[in-house]
Every structure is written in C-alpha cells, then in structure tokens.
Length: 74
Image 1 (spheres, helix red, strand yellow):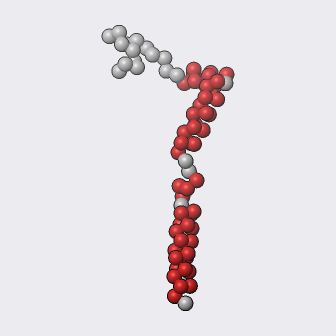
Image 2 (image 1 turned 180 degrees about the vertical axis):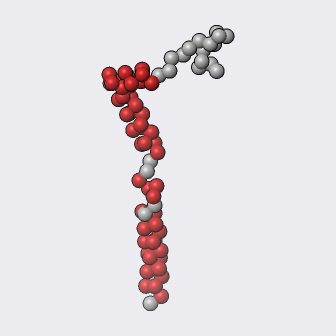
C-alpha cells in the first residue's frame, strides 16, 4: 500500500510541475525571433520604393552650424 502511495505522490508532483511549466507566460516568447522579424521588416521597407521614399521624407538633413560643425555632432 505504501508503495502505491509513494508512486502516486511522486508522479503527481511531477505532473503538477509539468503543468506549471506549460502554463507559463513566457514559454512561447523568444525575443531573438522578434528582433529578427523586426529587422526583416525594416529591410523589406528599405528595399521597396515606397519605403525608400518614406525614409527620405523623415530623414533630417544635417545643417552646418555657425562654428563649422554639423547638427549631428552636437
């Protein structure tokens, strides 16, 4: 009788641990995959004509300052 109880207790605790691991929030989230997808989307936008035009419109033009340095140096 005690053998069945020990087996049931051990397997029950393993089942609870497995369920807790499977129900974790971050189990299916891989930050590296998100970075790769974002980089791929940025590359796709950069290679398309509309993406290049949009990047040109939002890009700030460096204006030289009175002391000879550009605005990006500041």
